[in-house]
Length: 267
Length: 277
Image (cartoon, each protein chain N blue to C red):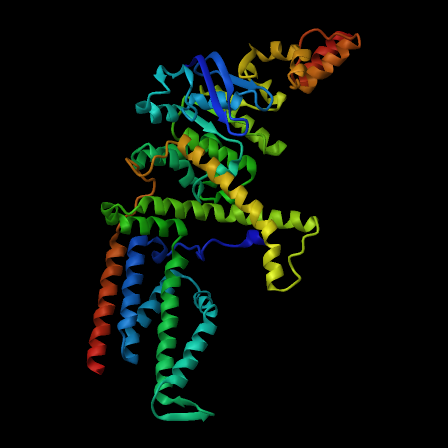
């Protein structure tokens, strides 16, 4: 069962959005996230919303698939919603004991709801259409200037890649160790939380030891393949800004401009 | 040509606080294009020896030259490592990237090869190990034999002259072992020197030359037929011989000498038929 797990949540596809430069996608996502937090009126959401729907359409990722990401934060949304409704001062809508629900609170809760949902949808569009490895490449490339102030950007990206590479391997191993320990009578399912946590120790110890051994062997294997950091290193896959990326940037700016114009009109 | 001249290698044994000599004043020459198998039980120094060839181990005494380059010279380190590629035992612990082609590209990327050239090398290397169809696959979805072939492709992409396989078939099932051996033999026919460390006598029997190690020294260095004709000596070293040779040896002890040393079942059948006719 552990084998079925997918890395990240990449949705394979061949659309313009999939092919766009990861750096551009990361930047656009960042811009929209900031944009979302500057929205002050309901209408201000419209440009970003239209753009997001448009992007989802051309990415060929089904709507329900994108919205699935919202399920995970449903509880969070509900809790913040309650806080907003009941703790905002203003005209009383209804009252339960000393708790007063206000219209202003309702308004604010709805506002937050839209904001958080859009936030999730936009960021999941990034991870849905970009493979983890492309994402790493993009982040490495964007953070490149930081190398000048001695931030180990390349090393960080390498660690990310290796982590991604070994997640399935370690998962498989965990599965194997669990089965081996179960075969010897280990019980992982019963008992209270503390007992269950204790039952994990016979899994974690061999797992850690093996992980360290793997790390050691991998380091030698990497050295044998002439790895020596990012000095004089080239890359098979080159990132290219293309016409589509320029177009996407222009669109993003337009959306932002629209947002500000609408905000200006309604305020 | 790899030349080891009176080379020694030892490490500090932390438990007993003594120096443990694993390679002991050993001299050896391996030519380009050769197919050498190295045998020896655990701790005989075979793995430490081959690691001297690509600068993973640095000799304590003596010298190792790879194509006349001194392995103690740090300036030629990457040059030597790209000439002498090494494939290890555990296929999982030597693949770096999440996609096959990325992994094969890892070596040339480290060497600073231009991207277009890397592309060509990756394609060629994957075709050479017959894994081109899996160019976009994730390593963890491949079988052991396939992973090991990807590891070989990753080495080939550095365009080495020598390919060392350090027990690379030990963790594979019979199918995977055959895949890897077939690939290695094909590469050898195309001119690649192969140095194969193995515990499988049938694999060693396919080499042109077999080196038997014991206590950090060379015990025997001859062609497989000669080595595997010395059944008693091999057994005294806790090593075996190929099954066919073993059977022939038993028959000989029982009074039926089929003559020459046979290494494969086919050769045995042929020799046996000739003998009983």
